[in-house]
Structure formats: structure tokens, C-alpha cells
Length: 197
Image (tube, rainbow, N blue to C red; front, side, top):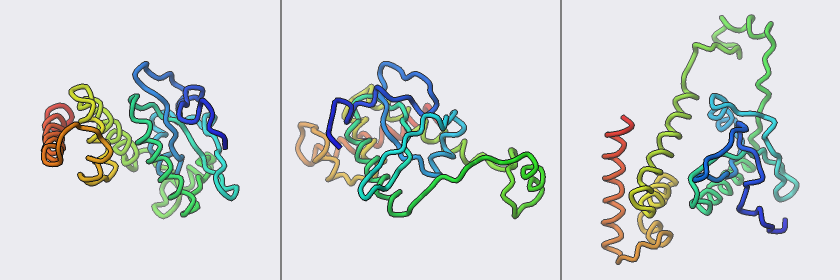
């Protein structure tokens, strides 16, 4: 696949729910696994906006685009590539979520059945709310200091402090860098407790 002008710029794509994005956001690709589909459904997942990308050996991966704060494309692409690898290893596939009315009514009282009970669980909504809260927290940190937003995103992605120091240019020594990361964590906790708890 040749790297063209849209290799890291997905502005010519539609978001997962077809809604326009804000000026300070950009679209990033996300593997549409079963879990991601369940997370995005409450936010208006439109299956018409799902693309199928072909990777090595002709393996196909369903992809949607979600809006995220501008300036973190490299981090998101790393996450995306890791998700593609995981998806291909586990041969994850999305099962149709179509359910006939008869099947719905037959299985609604069957606890072992696959019927859908709209009062059953809020797990998907809770997951979506959590992801949105984390995204808003990262945005709040980035408003105070762009490096803080990057650091928090990397921490959430599972990077160790020494790896973060090599990825984010702080202009500080190693000791001061570790102190800045700890300051970022402390501020993130304070912001979370104050605004989102």
C-alpha cells in the first residue's frame, strides 16, 4: 500500500456515527471488534460507515473512525496497529446483531438464551462513558500543558515511565522528567476527583 496524502490523514472518511467532528479533532482508525462495536453502539454506530481493510495474507479487518483530539495521531496509530495484530491473531469477527421479533420474544424470559433484555445490563454504556471521561481528562491535561496530555495518554496505553521519557520531549533531565510524570499523575487524579467523580 503506497503512502499517499491520506496515510495519516483520515479527513476524507466518515466518523463511526456519521456526525461531523469539531475543528480541534481528527479522525483516527479503530478496529471494530465485538467489544468495540458494543461500546460504540450506544453512541450511534452506523454500520454503513464501517470499512474493510485488507492486511497481510489477504486478512480483512473491519475499521471505523472515531474523533480524537488533534496532535496524537502517532500514538493512536500505534494503538491501532497493535489492535490489528490482536484482531488477526484471535480471528475476531463481528456476529450480526440482527434479532427477529419472534426470537426476541421467545428468548426474553430465557436466562440461558441469547435474547436481548433492554433492562439487563448497562455495561456497554458504562464502558463508553468511561472512555469518554478518560478522553476528556486527557484533553483537560493537554489544555494546561500539551506534554501532560501526551504523558497521560501514554500511561493509559501501558507505557512505563522510562519509555515515556524517550517518547515525549520534555527538555528536562531524567530525574526532573520522572518528577514531571508524577506531577502529571497527581494533577490527573485531582482533576478526575474534582470534575468527573
